[in-house]
Length: 117
Length: 117
Image 1 (cartoon, rainbow over the protein chains, first blue to last red):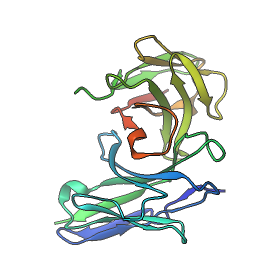
Image 2: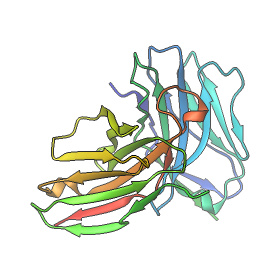
Image 3: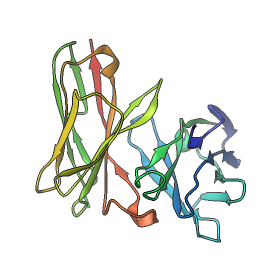
């Protein structure tokens, strides 16, 4: 079974608008970490934001926020005020403890975001 | 500080040849992980090294191997190349290898894009 599911292969958004990229996860661990990465066409994976399973507040980093709904096992990335430079692949990842995954991050298949001017 | 450096960035090989890829982690990072990224399979974990020892290995054939040196630099080797080995190989480093906190975020290099003809 997929541990990380990103159901949107591609998303389009108008510049300056907000966009939500979906991510659901599957784990039986109580302690885990959720990460979002951005991969532009150059190939480098760029870390965006982190959410711990015990964090009660949603994580925010500048224009990025993570809508964490623990009961639903979802960790959606919200990008506010989209910019042309946000066009890239976005990957959701999870790091579980030793019982779940030996701390090896598992990545989703990614969502391609295109920002239109 | 310098990021994760991967060399070479691009390379073309023919079937049956072997290839060695290099990764220099962020200074002070002792954990180095390797991932293979293809359009069909997404990001797949290859192996992880910590203190010159392989700690985890993904589901790849023995043709894929790696090592880590005392300065934490890592190399991965693929022998008897096959067409299906064409991929972007990403190296990532982190401060520690265990734990699920945000302090354990993976920092990726720009990748080595291997084409096998």
